[in-house]
Length: 198
Image 1 (cartoon, one colour):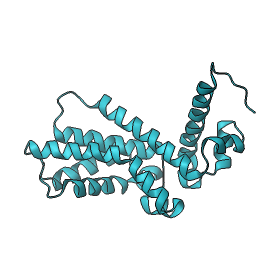
Image 2 (cartoon, one colour):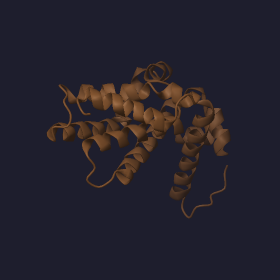
Image 3 (cartoon, helix red, strand yellow):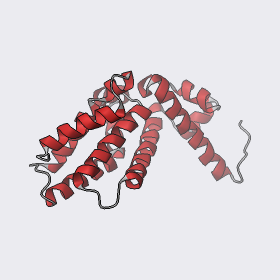
Image 4 (cartoon, helix red, strand yellow):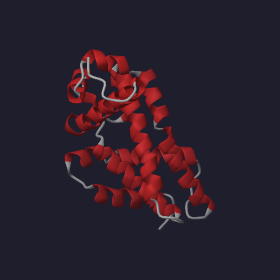
């Protein structure tokens, strides 16, 4: 059993959980989330599989926690990096760039592959964990429509399509065929033109 180095058991558990999620982050960069096993994660975190299963009963639960953490980082980064009083178009560009940077930092399979790997129930829970990112995008679109900068018939459907366009750059990014900056410009230009901006 690992030695407890924190002041309390609660702090120790929080530190161990953090080490586990950091291990998932590191492994996702080298082998992709779909290829990661619970044994890999335990080894990378420096704990036994038994300890890992005490925190996460299966890979689906582990991926849900990891996705929740990545989503939190995204929201914090978006709020921190967005200039005060930015236009809807600039906010959209920032959103696209941060999404692409996240795809590169934490490579993961596409939606269909994740659904097949996790099963429909776990995939639905995963989708609910990333909903805050879609809400940010919907708010950007709504502000652009209110300002007369964007035109769209269905905001929610448009947000899903924009996320799909961003996701289409996943493989070229991971393979090194495009950079975050290059993909960001390409996707932003495409999306802004589709929204009637520029």
